[in-house]
Image (cartoon, rainbow, N blue to C red):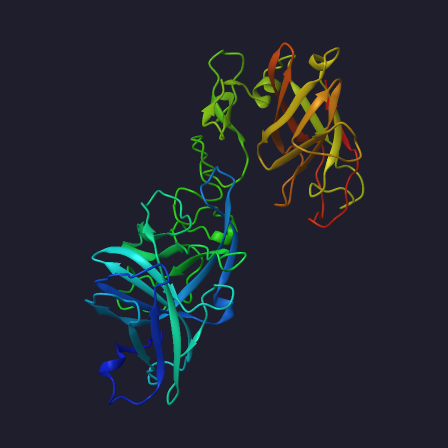
Length: 440
């Protein structure tokens, strides 16, 4: 790994040095700022190492999302200790061609008061995003660094405008280390749209290599939970939040599925039936409210026990190879006797298990969604399996509907089962129309 040992020095102390490198002049438009330490980190300026992620939740469960831009450290610019005011302060970064051929970097300035991070700065382009600078031999360039005062937040707090956070990694692979810095510059009212991006700088893994200065090979995994931000890690600042995590049902979207309702297994104590490994019951987590519903028999439990309340849908995959696929929906009609003769029921899809996905409509030709009002006789159920192939005969899952009628809310568990195997299915292959039979 190449390392850049750039020399950072006060410009006034470098009159004898050759005129080369870059001069950074700090400005603090928010007012004077006193600091005990300034650190400069040089991030890789190559566009393929700067990545945007749009699905980062400002607070998981809130629905508010941020567009996040990741930068990766390429080198250290150095540090300066002890100054009274940083407004008008000048630093020069000199190139070291013996250790690196890079001549463009995105510089970031971090201002500390003791151990507290109180300000972040960058050379900004016209839109307010960090811009690259040239640090080249025999060439002198000058830039203005705009430093924004920030309020450091706790480890469990969301990053909002005007706040910053150092993200520390703790895992079994190494000792704890600072994985990076996340901050959200304050919107500039002069610019109509302000700054759109929350910014994140990935630092090298000094837990694995204390001398490392280059983080350009790191993935966008700031919280070190082995889940990349662009791969549905909706909160890359906290390791408990990522795709596939257990849903904690605490009002926060731990598993990043954006679903309000999540079915969870529980032990059914009524003794009506028993299903190995599941406890025979189901609870519905309302993740918006952070509450768990009562434990009731699951669809598999009801159908395994021969209960007359068993509801089952069979999806027919017979026919020519690849002519019908779990990659596209099948449609069947589910009767809802409790809604007949009423002013209409509210029907909601609460969730599904084992890769099944489901939507409902009052028509078999479109309008499928997860919530319907004014249902009188039943709903058309559109169901499919996920795109992990192959699927085989007997693939079973469950869909859960909540029906709110005049006589109270009902939980309707439906067992989904494929009635035949598929051959040669790909996610792009054709559909299978209405080849679903829902049993009463």
